[in-house]
Length: 240
Image (cartoon, rainbow, N blue to C red; front, side, top):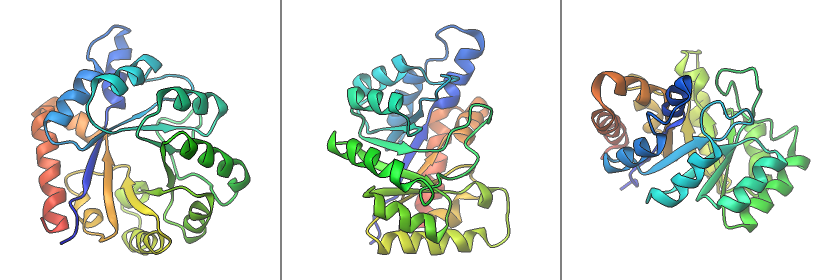
């Protein structure tokens, strides 16, 4: 039987709400603890250059207070490499980052930046950190990702979530290609109750990372209910 798909919960937007008032509430670490208690398999947090949501101290607390794998999303900069070296999270997912963007707008251009990214991938691996590359479902990007030595690709599902034609087919081909090259396949961005099923049904997918929808829907239904409902949608689509 196919292994159960892991659900990673991104807590960035709990920090966004906290930072809107500049205080300590709501606490993203408390949200992470509740997420794990409610069925999340891991926690994802993106430390941005401008610290617009997650702060350095949040990551330190997540690493020490939450008994679940921590996936640190980060730009491939020397500053972030230094933080990862000190923090030693379970995994680092390298993502593109522009200060003016509201959210990550697309995948990393691994094919065009392989000479820069490859030594950083090897450095992270040397520190015992699992490395994921957040990429569009494009054959050239997948081949380039495998060549860097990264263990994982996370397929950007944003275009699929927006309803772009044939995007699910692109994701299907990309997932199969990545798996054939020995890469573990994750996916995320824009996934909801309504659209997660077809992505979860893709056989090579091992993990989904979901944040904005879960945190937003939790305003109405509560975080435990939302995570358990999403978990049920994923398990049903994956045949569990």
